[in-house]
Image (cartoon, rainbow, N blue to C red; front, side, top):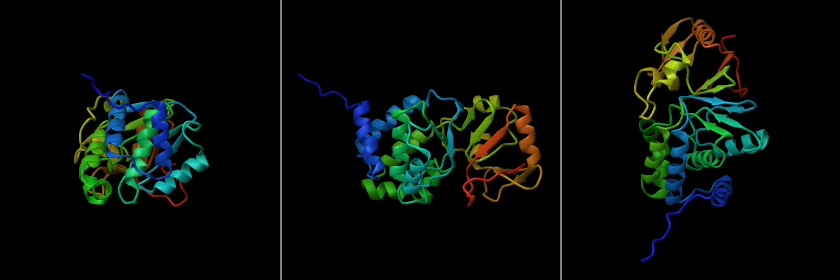
Length: 257
């Protein structure tokens, strides 16, 4: 009696897959399944506040715009030549969510110390069923299996990152329920994004010109003023908060300064 070995992603095989993905060609369902199992093993060892070393290039929402991601790598340098920190929202809206998120996960598996991938509010089962990723998976694979594989993996993505103990990175913003980074470190993040509460706020909140906490027009999270940012930075010995979640036409924007 003989047994066929379980397929594994050797570095060589993974390099071929990354090369294929860089041409905007999706992997097979089985390749995605094996890749995401390996990614899960890596991500479950990462912290809710994942430490990151400098130098690193910090990036905002991609939203299935594969060719923008390719341009970003062209300008900023390929991984692993450049270290990257992505702050969530890899899927939905654009037409290449599958290729975009698969490439980033493949790079994470291949170069786990060189790329950090945080969770955005769109890395969720509920949101992806409305904004495009679910339908794209059905269209490209003929069933929802790949959607389920990825949305299960999203539960393991770190919520925030901390660059050199002084730049706090996250998708959305602050929460009235969170005073310290240790509060975040103590979460159980392995779950669907809740409708409310501190984990929801980290992925949904926005800075605002008005002081204090406000009701978010998004229907989730809060708005927070410069006074809130300054207090949080002071309490946690931070120099800067870097966040995504909103479009700025210049590519980056200084706020609460």
